[in-house]
Amino acid sequence: MKKFIAGLTFFSLLAIAGQGHCFEPAIDGVRVESGADIRVSFTVMNAFTKEIEEAIRSGVPTSFTFFMELARVKSHWFNEGVGKWQFRHTVKYDTLKEEYEITRDEADVVRTKEFGEMKKIMSTGSAVTLDYAAPAAAGQDYELKIKAELRTVKLPFLLNYMFFFVRYWDFETDWYAYNFRIK
Image (tube, rainbow, N blue to C red; front, side, top):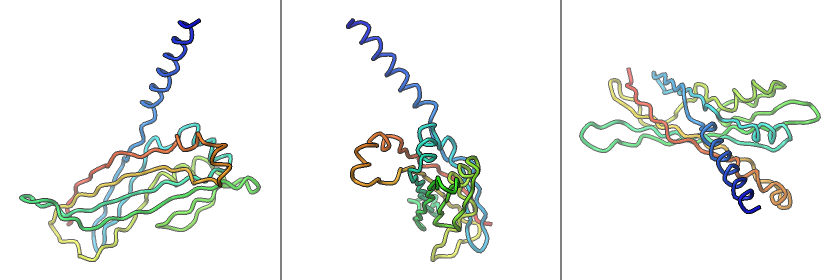
């Protein structure tokens, strides 16, 4: 019996470890448009697991928080920080209307009944404007870093204990660095 339990435990841990390799969210498809201001577009790949999708469909509010840092690249010295930004996308499913409401800090609220469209809106930053005090210098090199975090919204006291497993769905990507030159 002990061998059976040990074997079952081993294969359970192996299955859990194997799932981690399939679900590795990452920033991808970064595009920067520079002119009078800097606009950034990107996507978070592999942002949704089956558990996260089920939680959203059951009405658990879920947020993606995006962090961006911009630095002027110096060839013989440390990079000079230009600015840091943070914005959030939060989705709530209304079971009565059967629609998803996506609140975005950098844009208008969007409502959709399509699950695929909701996933795309939640995991995409589209033409996000980086506002900063110093004007961008033409011919200057910059480094943009982007990171995303998924956090399920804190539930009321008793529900937080009933749904303790929800916090294990949270993730964060590694920092993605993108270098570009102002034209």
